[in-house]
Image (cartoon, rainbow, N blue to C red; front, side, top):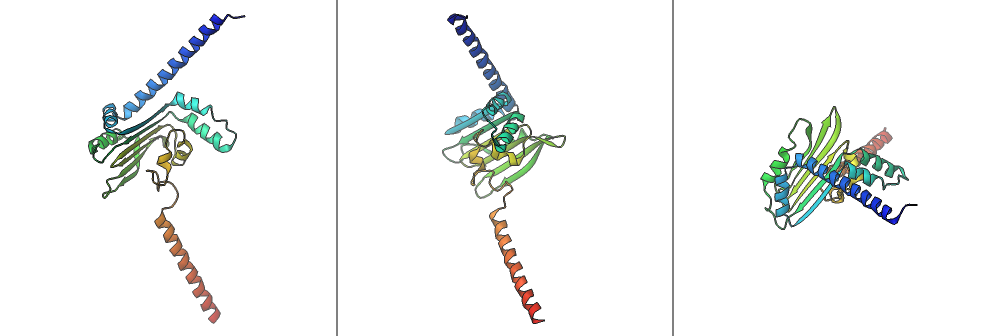
Amino acid sequence: MQSKKGNTMKFRVLAFLLLTATAASLTSAAQTIQQLLPASVEKDLAARASDVTEVTLGKNMLEFAAKFMNGKNDSDAATRQLIMGLDGIYVRDYEFEKPGEYSMDHIDQIRHAFETPEWSSMVRERERKTGESTDIMMKMVNGESRGMFILSAEPKELYIVLILGPIRMDDLSKISGIAGMGGMMGPTGPMSGVQHTPRPKDKEKEKKDETKDKAKDKTNDKTGGAQ
């Protein structure tokens, strides 16, 4: 029978190993994102912003989070498998009290970090009136997606998402709750209109086409009846 002293010593050793592993995971994740997002830009944006949200999930942390998914239904099982295959999820959300508190130089430096052959532009939107912009880039390796980068810039908010590993557009809704990306997937978020759902203009066009088709059918019926 082990003594209480021995049990206490084992507990301390286990706690130390857990803390060391967690610290190593966070350090590795921090180094990964700094390789893509300039550390000086991150630091400057955080100093200027009134509210800052940072989510840093390396591979070890993602695997740890996936263990809490019981996988009782197909949706949970698919999400768990998706998370287990990712190498990291990094989210940065900077909110500012007024427009002009960050510059285009910040945006250009972030974009420049992803101007490499393996990163391809998927969506590039610019609004001249509001000054808003959205960039979505995919990392392609041997014809397969191995990462996604999202940069949404508004006059009073700057939103950055970096996902490393096999990821598709359809997968974003599955991990939005885990990585704090719920706002991005909402109707007013940067990903609104980028999904596979048609835009309002397309729906109006569909209604007009249906009306025209019905009118043609009625005309044909009348012509056929007259003959």
